[in-house]
Image (spheres, rainbow, N blue to C red):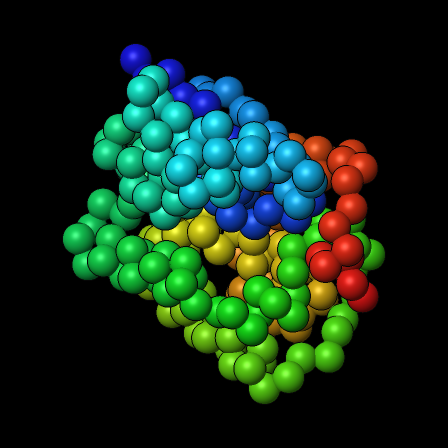
Length: 217
């Protein structure tokens, strides 16, 4: 029986932490949660106690440590095959993996200009060409997946790792009031309505730590 501990950062700010946390919750996989606030004097030391990178998220399964969000999700998919965390179809699974890898390594303009800050009052911001390009690419990806998805309402039908990976983008689009087509808004609404997402949002709003770089207007 797996003995899982997930180490995360502030729920208000840590988009990387949200991904495996939401996946575990949606899959109904029990785990213990350790929260380490980011950018405090002892953050790095506390994180180094769990992983050699000194960053979050980190998954501990007994004496096994996994310290990257995508690697954590892959590990969970292998550990819990019955949960079907990737699409069951081989081609759809390849597309889902490609999209997650793209999200993992790209979209730097979107990340920097629209940082995750759940406590921010939703309002729009000016978006330069690079951010607009990133937004357009996300919308293109989601639209393509939703057009071919079977029943379930998520990118590949049932909720998968791909939805967990794009959940922080759903939040960013909500926080910064990014205009999206109706079918994308419906998908985003389903993500926002997940009980696990509601739990994360409530916890984030209850946090008191403030990080100036993320709190800019």
